[in-house]
Image 1 (cartoon, rainbow, N blue to C red):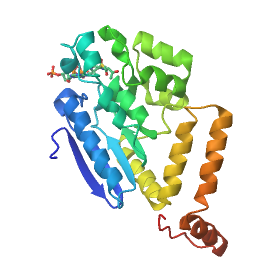
Image 2: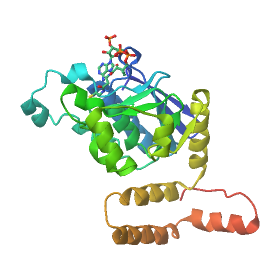
Image 3: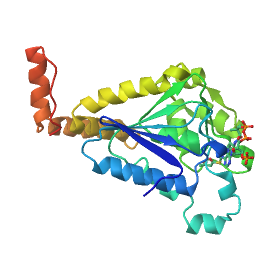
Length: 257
Ligand code: CAA
């Protein structure tokens, strides 16, 4: 598939996906989500790729789902065609994804960033769920994920008033993991991605699965799930190598098996 709305670039074991609809501030239309889904399929199928970064432009990570594409829908076509249903491919990804966000991450843009495993923000980033201004509400998981990230009060404030949060507030609220100067955004994201790419892949995937389970289940079930994955990590060669390397005071050479 030749991409028109995203660009991809591989650096070592890291694949960078740049959302690329500059004239529409990277508004997320069906084509872009289909291309991103295709890139995710290829990423997951390629054993040499260990981490993905999704980024946008300096001005916008993404200014939301494409309003012009959605405007003609009525509730029957939205339901029958399962509008935004295809977005579910993104959180199904089992390998790690980092969102590197500069500028606007609004509506579906904020939702896409939250579907990634963590968000590194430039100091220019602005997050919001402004769908209320359009006479609708978030439809890509915003009411659920934002509430889990920042708590009920802030999520209600953002979703009901449509106000934006700047990068500092987003960091204070737990929406983003770190804030860096805009010109260091990609460098910082690559540094984190390279670090993850050097780890044992099964350990990375198990960790992602276990952290995500915290959102889906009770504490007791989540801890049991974590314990079982922890035990199964002892079936990998990487466990034996990683622990031996510590004892030998050398760096580990993971085989990802
Ligand atoms: N969909 C379609 N086109 C969009 C868009 C969107 N979400 N956001 C921006 N654009 C387009 C504009 O229409 C404009 O196109 P034209 O040049 O053809 O007119 C172009 O991008 C540049 O935008 P602006 O001129 O508006 O740029 P600005 O700097 O003045 O303002 C902004 C920037 C504040 C982000 C403003 O563009 C804006 O408010 N965008 C919409 C934000 C929004 O409501 N997002 C939620 C969408 S609904 C959703 O996402 C549902 C969901 O839950 C998944």
